[in-house]
Image 1 (cartoon, rainbow, N blue to C red):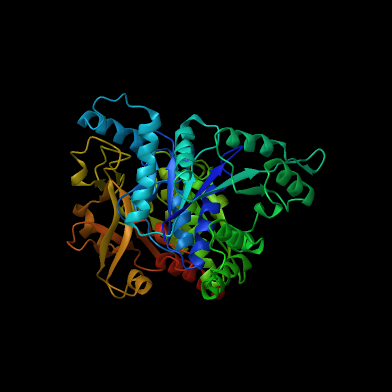
Image 2: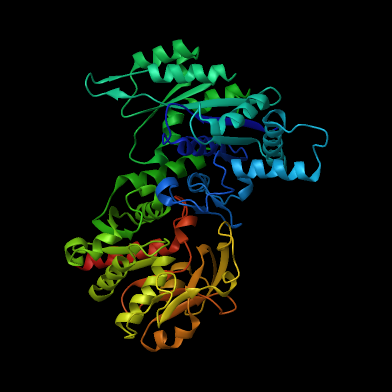
Amino acid sequence: MPAKFVVVLGSIMSGLGKGVVSSSIMKILDMYDFKVLPIKFDGYLNYDCGTMNPYRHGEVFVLDDKGEVDMDFGTYERFLNRSLTSSSSITGGKLFGSIIEKERKGEYLGEDVQVIPHLTNEIQERVKDFAEKNKLDFVVIEVGGTVGDIENGYFIEAMRQLSLKEKVVFVDVTYIPRLKTVGEQKSKPTQSAFRTLMGMGIIPQFLICRTDGEMSDSIRKKLAMFTSLDESRVINDPDMDSPYQLPQYLIDQNFDKILLQAFNLPKKKINLEKLEKWKSNVDKIISRDGKEVTIAVVGKYVELKDSYVSVREALMHAAGKLSVNLNVKWIESESLEKSDPNSILKGINGLIVPGGFGKRGIEGMITAIKYAREKGIPYLGLCLGMQLMAVEFARDVCNLKGANSTEFDPDTKYNIIDILPSQLSVKQKGGTMRLGAWDMLIKDRNSIAFSSYHKAVVSERHRHRYELNNKFRKILQKNGLKITATTKDNNLVEIIEWPSGFGIATQAHPELKSRIEAPSPLFLSFLDAVKKQQLTI
C-alpha cells in the first residue's frame, strides 16, 4: 500500500495542542495496526532547537541519535511507545541550508533558485523519502506555527502540491472561544481562518475544535455550514484531565472510522487489545487513587511548565503505575535564595532537581538538596541535579568549602564539576554537547540504581557539557557518597547515591524515555520510596 499522509495544521493561535492531536491520530492508526511515524516541521531558521531558551520554546527534547528536537517529539514518543529519529524533524534552517548547499555544489546550474519550485520540491522529496525508507502506511505531518505565518507558508504550499500527487488528508486544529460576558461560544474566528486556508488552496477534511467545555450543537452546525464539511467531520477537543484521553475521545466521535473512509479503508478493524491496554493505562493516570504525595520540582524555568514537560509526564506515568495521588509543587529555585527553605519546602514528600544551564538559581537548588538530605526526604537529581548533589555533598559533608562547578565559578578551588575534556576544543554551541543515548554500567548490585533497572548495563539519553571531576572521586567516596554507575570505560560518572536513605542522581535524562506504557525505572523507584515512607508515617 502506498504511503498516505495526514497533515495537521493550526489556525487562529499557537499553543492549541497540535502535538497532542497529531500524537492521538498516530495512536489511533497504530491501534489499527498501521505502520505510522510523524514528521514535524518548524519554521524557525535554527538548524534545531538545541540553542533555544526553554522559556521561549519549552524543553529541548533529545533523541537516541543525538537529535535535539521540538518538545512535541516527547509527546509523539509517549503516545507511540517507540523511539524516533532526527529524520522526523524538519526545520527551516535544515531546508534552507540544504538548498544553499546544493546551489553551491552546482546542482541547480543555470537556474535561479526560488522558494517555488526548488524549496517546495525539496520538502516533498524529504517527506516521500521518509515514508519510503521507513516502509510506512501513514505519515502524520505536524506543521508548526499558525496558518498565516510567513515562516510556514512555503511548507503549507508544499503540502498542497503533495496533495495533487499523493493521498493527503488535511486536519485543521482551531479554537472556539467562549466570551465570559455572554457565556457563548463563538465561531467567527474559525470561519475566517478556514477561509484563509481555502485561499491557500487547501480545504481541510476535518476541523478539530479546541474548547473549554463541550462544543454546542449550534456551533457545530454553523461551522459545518460555513466550511462545507459534514457535521461528523467537525470534531470536539475539549479540555481534559489528561492529554492521553484524546485518542479515546476522538474514537467516541467516530473520527477513526471517518478518517479511514477518507482514505478508502473502511473495512479495517481496530485492534481491541491495543485499545483496552491504552484505556487501562490512561484510567490509572487520571484516577488519582492512593494517598496524596507532594513532590517538589525545584528548577530554573518553572514559570513555563513546558520547560519540564518530560519530568511532569514521567512523574505521572510512575504515579499511575504505583497508584499514587500525585501533587507536583513547582518551585522557582531563586526563591530559596531569598527565603527560609523550611517555609517553602515544608510538607514535601519528595524532591526533584531537573536539568538546566547557567548560574541563576543554582544556590537555591543546592539549598533544596541539602534540606532533603538532612531531613531524609527522597531525592532524584537529573543531569544538573546530579552535579549539584555532588557539590552539596562536597561542601557540607566533605567540608570542601566553596566547592562548585566551573560552569558557575571558573575560579573555584574545588571544581567538583568540570567541563568534559572533549568539550575544551568545541567552538560551536549547536549540537556539540554529549548528546543522545549512552550506555552506563551499574557496578553496585546493592544500589538503588540496580534495584531500579534490574540489570547492569542500561542506556539513557544525555545532554551536557560538564561532568563530575574524577580528581574528587576518592574524597567523595571516602565520606560516603556512592558512585554506583559509570560509563563502561569508567571514565565518566553516571549515577551517584547518598550513603543512607533514598538519594539518587544521574547525569542522564531518564525522563526522556518514560512512556505511559513503560514508566522510567528511576521515577518508579523514586515514587515508590516516597510512597513507602508515607505509609510508615
